[in-house]
Length: 168
Image (cartoon, rainbow, N blue to C red):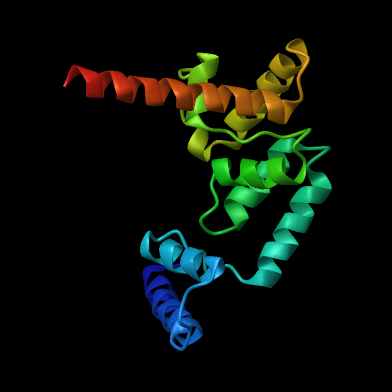
């Protein structure tokens, strides 16, 4: 989508949201998220049919070809990079895929190894294989293992913030 198309889409999106909410006395969760995403430029001009077509293809090939599935999602859907593509697959198949996130990478102690993960399906594939291996070694499900690392990172971050506040 070029600049002019995006400007046109943004204008139409604003008008569409306005039409939906102008006579409401409150917002639904969907309305709220749509406005929020519009404001932070996190909206996607993707059409429902295209999303269905691409996700169906990705789901069909995900078992056989991780790289192809992540590449398809991240290259064919507007606003979808590798992290969102990984979230799509992880939510569909939590026992086979995990979400790539800098916090988990940091907890793994692998920041250098996975540098550039935001736009690299190849890095995601290596990350996923490592996560599967580590989860198996820990005798945990992939989602359980990933979530533990994520939560550990969040706790560390909160503890660091508390320490900084105490020092002030």
